[in-house]
Length: 126
Ligand code: HEM
Image 1: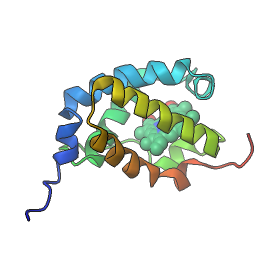
Image 2 (image 1 turned 90 degrees about the horizontal axis):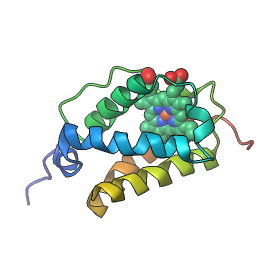
Image 3 (image 1 turned 180 degrees about the vertical axis):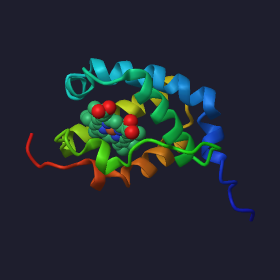
Image 4 (image 1 turned 90 degrees about the vertical axis):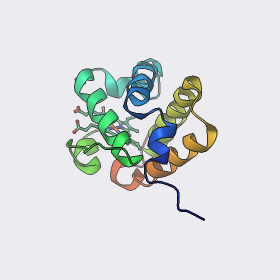
């Protein structure tokens, strides 16, 4: 059997245009959800969107190079706990489902991102 091409997930996410559309849906949901909204009140939205598109593109095997800060540095002052992290993952899944992303691709992307939890979660307190 041939190995899956390394950009298979990127293609399933609809490539760059699909990721831009995903972020157009995801960021407003993050802002509207009471669990995550407070974190995103004063962020530079255009920059965050660009960084997320590049990061998800790279993580999914696409032809992008993420040039933002590493996950530890960008989240260290935010006091993110497990509940915040899980809420973001849940909202991302809702967004991917709304885009019609195939379920297997949803799960592959979430598995990649789940591996970043140690860098992002910095507190046990609520
Ligand atoms: C797997 C989960 C996550 C990923 C992949 C992720 C990814 C990113 C990326 C790529 C950036 C941009 C960094 C830069 O501009 O250099 C960022 C910034 C940010 N993230 Fe996350 N993040 C995750 C979880 C979370 C969670 C759970 C929260 C809060 C609920 C959060 C809140 C923020 C905020 C507020 C910023 C903007 C920081 C600023 O501009 O000062 N992130 N994230």
